[in-house]
Length: 154
Ligand SMILES: [Zn+2]
Image (cartoon, rainbow, N blue to C red; front, side, top):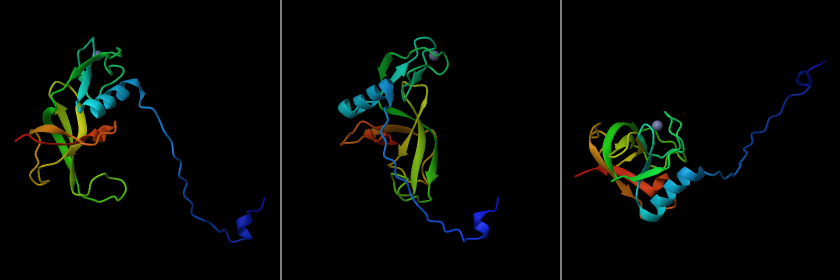
C-alpha cells in the first residue's frame, strides 16, 4: 500500500483542546477543606492503630490501612523541614511570582509534612529548621489556598 504522503505534501494544523471538568476530593478532604474555609482552622486525623497524625488528612492510614475517623485540631505552627526556591517563571502555572519558596512544614501535632508557600523571609535567608506559622487567607473558598502561606514565627 502506497503512503499518501509520497504523493501529497502533508499539511498539519496545531490545535488545543480545553476540557473543563470537576472532581470530588472525597469525604475526608471535603471535611478538611470545609473546616479551613468555615473556621480558618487546620485539622489533621489520627490513625486509631499506629496513632500517626496526618495532615493533609487521609481516609485510610498508609501504614495500617485503618479508617481514619479521629480528628485533631492543630495549632497552626510547625517546623520548616525543607524547602526549595523557585526562580524560573512559568506564567499561568505558579500561583506566585518568582522567586518564591515552597517548603515542607512538619506541623506541631502532626507526623507528616504539608507542602506550602513560605513567605515573610527572603529566599537567600530561609533555612530548614525555622519555626513557622500558618497565615489563613481572609477570603477562603475550601481549598489549600485557604492557607495563604506559612511565615516565620517572630
Ligand atoms: Zn496507622
